[in-house]
Length: 439
Image 1 (cartoon, rainbow, N blue to C red):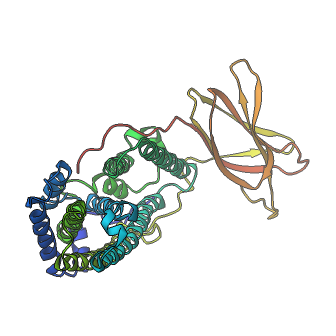
Image 2: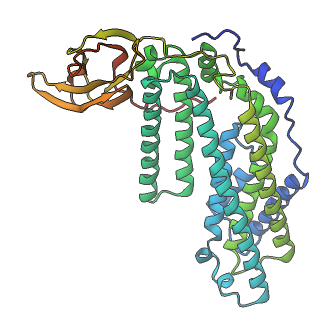
């Protein structure tokens, strides 16, 4: 595939693009409200009503600390805090005095907490959808440049299998009684694993080392980009410097909201929430949800329109269907066979073939089936016989041995068939268990 005309994607290149997308500043109230909520929480914790707990100490330290540097880590942190707050606000977990609503003050506080719960539920759902969409955009963009045959299919299957395994890991943690914090620690580790796999795809190492020879036709500029996208001084660092501070402020605000709710609800039986304090909470939640939604919409538009999100056509990509194919003529009444040896289970047998149109422009087809041949010579039909004009497919092997792919033109009495095909036995592709390095 030709890559002439493609511009190497660098931090400087992205900087010129980001110049076109200045992020509107957050209202000053975002920082002021976070400070105010932390001050109120400190006052409640210092009062003789109830001693501060270890969990509250940890939460206060996190709320007053410096947020993580990565954009995506902050997004996960905000998602975690919203879930923690919703856990606190679950009606069955609210203080008994609040649930009974024996006074007008209790009723007013209950209504405010319901409103806070509704706003954060809505924002959490939008954030989850944003993360899914953004992840799919990144993967699909990379796949745009992958050869459009079984190699791309195998990488997609690897991703789907990997995501199923990750979800099973999360489900097991939850079923074992893992906390929200435990779950998000795992989710972030999994996110870093994805990042490592993306970098490995760029350098054809690790999980993709067995596919290195199948990446023929991928622009080197793309492989270079996805390998170094998250480097300390790479393209994403430009994004962090420009858009990170606003997100860091929102992270501190949601931490302050959680801290205040945790401290105040834990002491509600001894000390009711004051009207001025509940008003500060309301304002903080309104600003947080409004500004966080604005930020995700803004950053989503920046991502989608960024220079590394371009189509293969825009990049001047050419057809990838010319590499590594073989051609053969199958006479009438004859067959063509290819035997592939497999040394390990969970390997892939893959094929991609089509018939070249004859001189009479007739619509032609050919029979195709796949057999497994055991070491003892016993044959087992894997893919039943069927006639095709073209086909692309693969399957995961359950036994080592030989696999015979057969193109059958024995039913034809007069017409030879011109077959163009590509086949291979791809060794097992397994996900790595090693932790991701910080970027």
